[in-house]
Structures are given as structure tokens and as C-alpha cells.
Length: 287
Image (cartoon, rainbow, N blue to C red):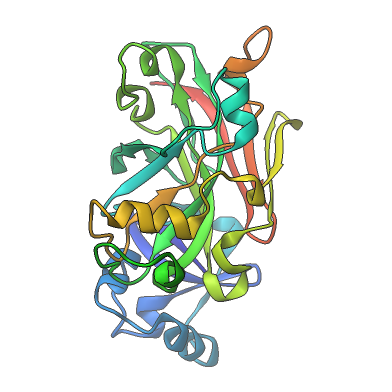
């Protein structure tokens, strides 16, 4: 099952992807909230709702004509992992970390598929990062066993953890460089966990900038996999339905190249993950 969030008269609405069309879930199933996070928090059976939507007569909206929002426009928490691929840690001059470099993103930093990622006025060091995003479907209790962690995952999506590198390096922690408005691409849709290998493992992941391959790796190369990351996070916090975990990026980022490669006005960046699709964002200067 593929779910997306599209914009209708400026309002974000959850939709079921059916081929090259989208069915508005709330229109097809009025008991399902129009907000995907709200539907997860209420414990809606979205698989059953999808079956009803496909069997019903709700309008099919052409996907190509829709403006897409981030898959979850207002996640509860966006927890990101830094240095979670061996090759990316090495290209940054570091050995394998002994513990994940966790940091948080804010919802205001997100941008949907097809929407512009912004080069801020304050910097020209805008860098791409192809990542697998994990969407939590049911509450993860504190200190969950690794063997039980994946049972709480609803699905996966593509994520671009776009970073403003000079701001990221201004302090010992990365918050400011990871939270500029309209930088974090998230989409184009969410694929439910039952359609993918456990933990989203063994999937090819790429970043392309203006068609040139910049990153090319596999999710099996992550240092901490999805199950272990969830278990480690649960030592500190309760993960809730609609929370997102961005699983880190492989080697090939722009700051590690000679000379560095920064995204500019007029570029297009693509994140493709096998069986998940391709997230595309044009790059534009901040208005």
C-alpha cells in the first residue's frame, strides 16, 4: 500500500495511491481522518480503509496534477541519525561511532515532493543527503526489545536531509544547520512495511544532482539498522504514531568532494530508493 499527502485548496489531505491516481481517504472512508498522522494516532486500520477505498466509487485524482505535501506534514518527532553508514563516517575522517549521532529536525524544515528546496539567503553551502525515512505506526514502549521493534513500524519513505553546512559547523551540535525552512524533502509517498524487506534493508539508495549520480549505496550498509535504532531510542523516549526516523546518509555528500559541490538555484535533486520511488525537488533561492 502506498499513501501520500496532497494539497487541496491549501489543506493537506491523506490519499491512497492507486496506480497513477490518488483516492482521498477521508472522502472514500469518512471515519478516517484527512490527516495521516491523526489516522495513525487514532489507530485506524488503514489497510482495511484502503480496501474500502479501492472498492468504492470515490473520485480518482490524477497524481500528475496534484501538489504533494511532505508525507507527514506535521510529524510528532523527526529523529535523525548522523554518520550511520561506514563509508560516510570515513569520508568525514571518523571511525565508526560508538553510539548513533542523534539529532532532531522540526516540521517547518520539511518540503514535499516536487516543491522547491530553498537555498537560504544566509548561506550558499546547501548539501544533499539521501536517506531512508521510517514512520512509526504504533506506540513504541520504553526499552523495547530489538526483536519487537519492527512491529511498531508502519512504513518507509524517501528523505533528503538537506544540510546548510557552514551553519551546521558553527556549533558542536548540528541543530541549526539541519533546520532551515523548506530544506528536508520527504516523499513522494509512504510504502507500508508489509511490502518491503524487514527494516527496509537491502534496498539500493541513490542521490542524483541534475542527473549525475552523487550517492549510490545500499541500506544494508547502515551501521545501526532500523530495529537497533528504535531500540536505542526507546531507552530515552517513547516513540509515538506519526514520529519519523531518518536513518542517515551514505558517502558522496557535497562537502566531502574536491572541490565541494553545493546545490544552486536551478538545480534538481533526486533521492531514489529501490521499491520506494523517487523524491524530486527543484532547488530555488529563498524568496
